[in-house]
Length: 530
Image (cartoon, rainbow, N blue to C red; front, side, top):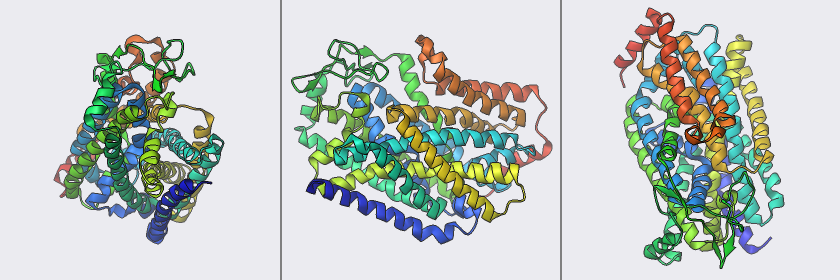
C-alpha cells in the first residue's frame, strides 16, 4: 500500500469513526422504545430535519451518478433531471410537509408511513399497511444495493484493484448495519446532518479546484464547444466506439479514444419527451419515505417553514455543483472514463488528482457520507415496515416493544444482505438503479400522499387502487412497455404517477364515500396549532 493510499484511508477512517461515535452516543436514547427508534420521539430541530432529509434523499447518486451522466453525455439529461429534482423538492416541502406533520399526529400518532396510510383510512384489516410495507421492503432493498455499489467503486479505486469490489461492498454493508443497529433514527438523522455538510463542502471544493486546474472558466467552456451538443440543454452528446456505434451499457461497448480525448458522434436532439422524462423525477419526492419521515419527526410543524428554506438552498447548490463536476471533469479528463459506469468515478478521480492525499480522503468521505445517509434511512424504514407494520400489526398483535425491536434488527440484517446481492449481481450504473427505485416509490406513494392530505372524498378502495396501480405500472412499463420505443420510452415514473392518480379518483368516486369520522378527522387537521 502506497503512502498516498494510506493517507486517503486515514481521512476516510476519521469520518467513519465519527459516524460510529454518533451511533454509540444516541444508542441509549434511541433504544428506549419503538417510537424513539423509528421516529426519534418527534424531536428533530429545523436544521437537522432539513439537512438529514436532503442527505438521505440524494445519496451516493449525487456525487457519483449525476456527475457521471454529465461527464458522459453532457448537460442535457443531467441539467433537466436536476431542475426536476429542485422543483420537486420545493413543492414537497411547500405542499406536503406541514400538513403531513399535523395529520400523522392526529391519525393515531402514526410513526411510519404505512401506519399513517392505515390510520388515515381506518383500515382495520390492514390491507393498505401490508401493501405499503411490501413496496417499501422491495424497492428500498434495491435502493440499498445502489448505495453498496458506491462503496465498491470507491474503495476499488482507492486501492487500485477491481478485485476488491466484492470485499468492499460486503464490508461497507456491515459498517452501515452496525451503526444503524446502534442508534436508530436519531443517530441516522444526526449523521445525515453532518453528512449533508460534508457533501456540500466536498462538491464545492472539487468543482472550484477543477475549474482552476483546467485553466479557468473560459478554457473549460472552450473545451465544451469541441464536443458536439455537450453543453446544449436541448441536445445530448453521443460517445461512440471504434466503429462509430453509440456507446451503451446494453451493447457493452466502450468509447473510442483518439489523441487522449474521447470520440463523439454528431450528437442528438434532446426531445420534448426526453425533457419531460427528466422533469418527472421531481414527482418522486411526494412518495419518498425517507423525506416524508423527516416531516413527521420535526419537533413543531411551525419549524418546517425554516427547514424548507434550508433544504431548498442546499438542494439547488448541491445539484448545480454535481452537474458542474461532471462537465468540468470531461474537460480535465477527456479520454479517461470510457463507459457510463466508469464515468461515475469522475468525482473520485478529480479529488485524488487535485488535492493532497489526506484532504482527498476527507473529500472522498463525502461519497461515503452520501451513501451512508441514504442506505441507513432505507434500511431503517424497511425494518420498521416489517417489524412494526407486518409483524406487530398483522401477524402478532400482542408483540411488545422489545419483540418489535428484535424483529427490526433481524430485518436490518436481511435487507443488508439483499442489498449486497443487488450490488454484486450486475454492472448497472448507480444512476439507472436509483431511477428504478425512485420511480417505484414516487408512483406508489406520491399520489396517495397528495390525495390523502388534500382530498377528503378519497376512500380506502381508492387508496389501495392508487398504490397498486402506481407500483405495478412502474414494473410493467420498465420491463415491457418502454421497449416499444417512441413515446413509450418515457421515464416510467410519469405514466405510473398519472395512472395512479386516475385510479384513486375513479375508484374513490365509484365506491362509498368515507365515513363521517374520517371526514371529521380530515377537517380537524387545519385547526391543529403549529
